[in-house]
Length: 284
Figure 1: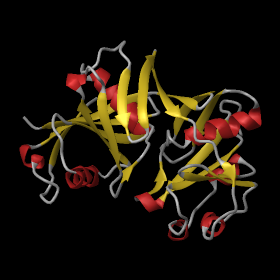
Figure 2: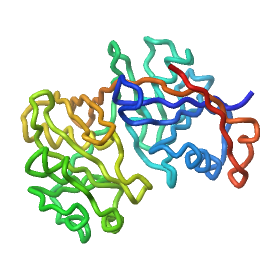
Figure 3: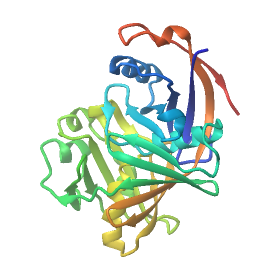
């Protein structure tokens, strides 16, 4: 038997939209180099690695890797992980998913065809724009703040957000995980729009970023005076994230659809210094 892996498009119910993540089911520990090699082979913004605790009775250890580094928090790959656990029957459909991560215990629950995550709130503080940020974006912001991981930049309009053509070489000089750019929407269908850039982690533009909405939830709740909001991340793939601020926690809601099923072949069980190969079959 190989190692089962699925690819899920998160924060969407339409294949080839939202943000794709690979979910790799592990039964035993693997070294970090091996995990990084698999993530590099998958070449998606995130690959999630799930390993059961006490056969899943105590939840799952969950780690997230971009093609170049491990990250501390990832929303879309957590949505994908919960979706994959329910869809493969590893977890009953009405059961809450428990994930033990570098950001503490995270949970996921089903709400009809939505998946709701319980994540930490990551409010920003006003900050001076670092060297490279304004030039890298090529536009003057109305506000700049800094959260635990990211800079958040507010622009005057959705048209300004959509029109950005960043200089990623300059943005790589900005310390931190990435840059969230946001504005009020042009349509009443959403409460805010955003884009997310993380070239330091090998992702020039992330399609839909759940963890960025841990910043955007308190950011826009403070401006709009409402705790329940809907955001649209306006990348070329696009995706919808529902947020609800609950004190120091944020509820993130999204949909998901599986697009690929496959396995890492037996040779992929070797250590990280060895090659990794995969065979994947389409899933409708």
